[in-house]
Length: 74
Image 1 (cartoon, one colour):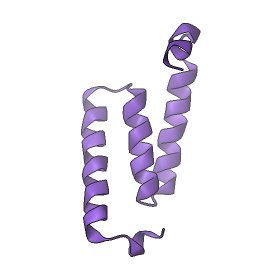
Image 2 (cartoon, one colour):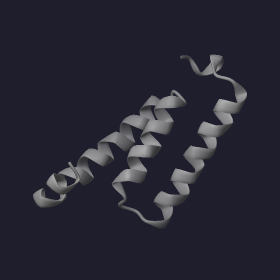
Image 3 (cartoon, rainbow, N blue to C red):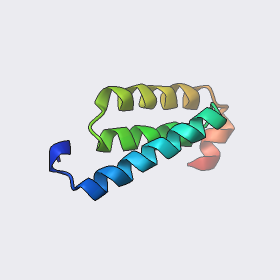
Image 4 (cartoon, rainbow, N blue to C red):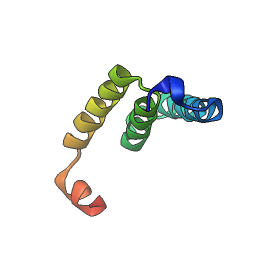
């Protein structure tokens, strides 16, 4: 759905989520879940470049984790 068709309340909610995720990421830099959620919020706000950047960070962080950690969360 194009961003101009979203209700104002939904946009405000998504923007609040985005701001919360930004604050979380500023507190703790390498939290994969925070980057993933921020990327998802950016996708919902049609901010595709920002979302792609965050998804790439998630991929990089996930690839650098030890194998047993990845298997434990799957």
